[in-house]
Length: 368
Image (cartoon, rainbow, N blue to C red; front, side, top):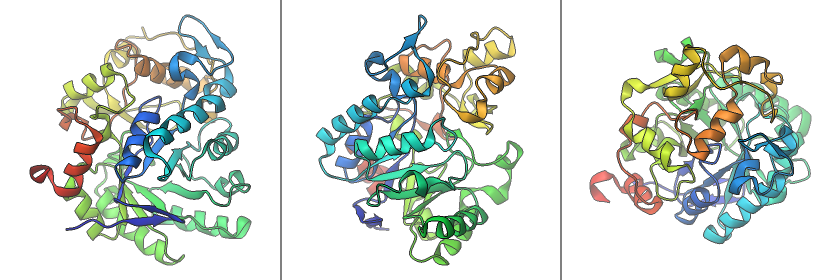
């Protein structure tokens, strides 16, 4: 099966492969810029930009971990702009996207920051982004891509956007429960057959047709060429992949994180409770053993990273601060880092270039 280009708004993506937006510091300038250069859509994560380049762009940090203080520093515009500028040096004028979690504190501000920094496309999940058009009303050229888990959610979103802003999504990502990081399902729902990507994708494709020509992008557990072919045969225009891109030389993640995922066995990858309020998937490491033993690092809400956490209330309930622990992963601190990965992360066994990976995905593993 040959793979074709597709469009998100006015932007043509040469290869139907979108690299998932992974934070903190997993998909920043090097990874996203290289993916776009190689014909896919590179996605810069807006999460935790204040820790970029050893906190050089955070105006205020605190403690021995140099944690950015409050959302204005954790989601640093100056850092995000520098990340986009550096990515542009790699990919030129090819389309670049930014992933902004709906659960982020200062969501509207961070979306505007991403538009000012040079994002062509905004992708948003971790909640149903009903206010997404409001956040981008001053940037009509920026394409909007919400993430949903059901056809019902897409219908609700389209109705609201049409009524409030006379706007519809330029594309939609439908994400199944095998993805890394935060899920769009409750814990028990993640294991139901009816919620598998191949089962939730066709209804979303049909609902998208009711609103015009909205491309549907399949995500969550897509690993190789044959998976992409399957999703395209079910009506998707493209796929989004995160974990596979962690296994690239250009990935911005620490070498420690890459090695932890390479070393992980299938049974090491679990769903965990998260301060965001959604279950999240990652590798069970020393951090989780320390949480169970009540020996995890002390929780103090410094960065105010996600609104549902309620300034550390939910962090204390689940036993860890997500901003601090993801930052530790970025810093390569094995003992206290939080290492997100998709359900297929145990299949990652080598580090290759983005170019080599894209060739495998487009042509098949044996033909690259």
